[in-house]
Structure formats: C-alpha cells, structure tokens
Length: 137
Image (cartoon, rainbow, N blue to C red; front, top):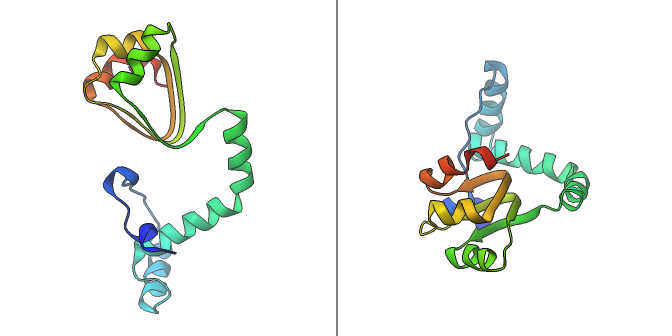
C-alpha cells in the first residue's frame, strides 16, 4: 500500500455510512486495539479492497460487457459543445466518477446528454442534476 492509497484527495473519494451490529463493531475494535489495523476505517477499507480483488475478474468482464468508462471522466463545456456541433447525444456510462463542468448550462446538458449511468459518484451542479433527473439511470 502506498501513500496515495492512504490519503485520497476529496475528488477521488466519497464518504459512505454503514451500520454494523455491536458484535461486529466490537470485533473490529478488538483487532484495532491488538494492532492489526490502525483504526476502524483501515480495517473496513482493507476488507473492501480484499473483496474487490476477489471479484476483480467479474468486475473486468462487466465493465467490458456494459461498455463502462473506468475511472474518472470529466465532461467540459467544450466536450458538450463539440457533441452538439456533431449532432451527437451522449450516453454517459462510468464506473468511478463522472463530472460535468460547472459552466455547462442546463440547455447544453439537455441538448447533448441522452442518459447517465454512474456506478460511483456523479459530480454536477444541483441545477444540472435536477434538469437531467429523468435521464439518470
């Protein structure tokens, strides 16, 4: 594990909340107190990575089958204007993070984005998200 794994930039991570039973939480605290993990988050992050590694081939196959863009993909105003000029409608499909630039107008987004499917996080203004709500799968 390198320093990048330990400290992600805010744009590269998303906070989630989970509920655990008291016995599970107690076992986590025991492993932390015995020095196996530095804190609860370290154990949970490690467990998630281990599960993702276990299922990596399924993820790879599904990404290919569903034609998902893997990682972070940013859609700038220039990108959407180019799509509009070409008469294209975008079907945004991302596993990771998709972001739409803050200077994209509602009109431009509606004219160019046919659908949005994101497994992970979609970063866009609340105005854009509201305008595209019916197109977000």
